[in-house]
Amino acid sequence: MIKRILVVNAGPVYPIKAMNQMRTHNMIRTLSRDFRVDLLTPYKDDESLSASFKAIHEMGGEYIPIISAKHEKNILKKRTAQLSEYLNYFIRGIDKEVTANRRNNKTIVNIIKERNYRIVISNYWEASLYFKDLDAEVYKILDPHYAVGENLNVLKRIKNSRVKYLLEKRRLSTNVLMEREVVAASDLLLPLSSRNHEEFLKIASDKPMLLIADGADLDHYLSYSAEPDPRTILFYGAMGSSQNRNAFWRFYKNIFPQIKTEFPDISLLVVGSGPSEEIKALHDGEKIIVTDFVKDVRPWLSKAWFKVIPLELGSGFRGRIVELMAMGIPVVGTHNALDSIGFENSKQGFICDTDEELIKYCLELIKNPVLRNNISLNAKDFVKKNYSMESTFGKLRKFLKSEFIYGSN
Image (cartoon, rainbow, N blue to C red):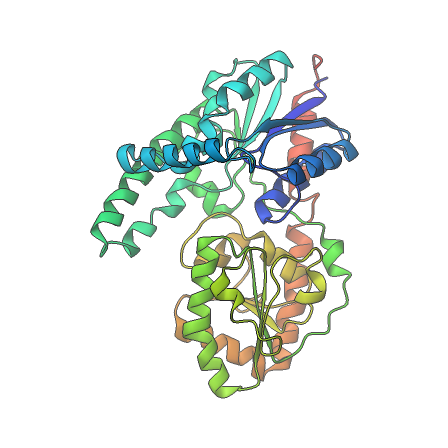
């Protein structure tokens, strides 16, 4: 029976600061119940190296580090690597992430061959081009996190900027071709949402797929006693993401002022790592609070009456939404932000795209505590049914148990 799995990630998984890291961690944790799961990643600093060794050892596996070209101590290599990424993007239309990850492909292939791994789970297609160089007996599982097709709508929004439009069109066209190469070399795909699944069916309808949404340790959130403030609105997400920053400024400039006109005492809570200096400067300790990274988000989230996420661009699954719903915090957001969750509009949350609609639903939640309570209860029930660890990552564990019951590794 095959008992070892290698998980490969494009960047450090630990310490966990973003939802993509949490997805990989939860997958490893679930699979570790039946397999020994090793983790291979580049590392950028001593903190990520130490945290990775500790976390994987505690789950019974081995951490295999590769020093990143962007390691904080290698200033010259870091600058050279960045220059290479920019040149490939502007001259050849190759995504910067593809250039960054290609540096490690040969090393990754050699490690897989030398250690005789027979199951490899690799995160992101742009970090999995090495799949084409692996032997046929290696079972290659791609966890793509998103599909390039989900990002094509970005072109419609930048048509007025001719140069940017042409550069992005070329980049996305190249990404489509590379994504298809990786998908073709994979044995199993793990789309994380219905929309994600639909996009991959368009390019590989005969490819085996398991829809694995971002499950969560729901008890961690369901059990937390919340005392929401009817005058506190939440914005929650990794603020280092350009998509989240753009969504924040849309909310702050277009939506928040309209709410304050009707409710002058309303306050804004911004929770998430990596806020820009411009966002930090909004913090006044009373009406606007910007936390930056916090180890335990629950005490902060529990203060919120609801969360707004007016995301225009981006793709993948919004795992933080599941955490909020598990705590009974209503969410108001765009289709791009919330469609991947799969809840029913106006029952477990509110989905709309215009500023006017977003403002309308925000005001309704402030004015109507009964409505807010109903949405809260429905949201909790929904995530308990659909987003437990067993109903998500547990599907992959059961599949691999049933498939690999022969040989030894």
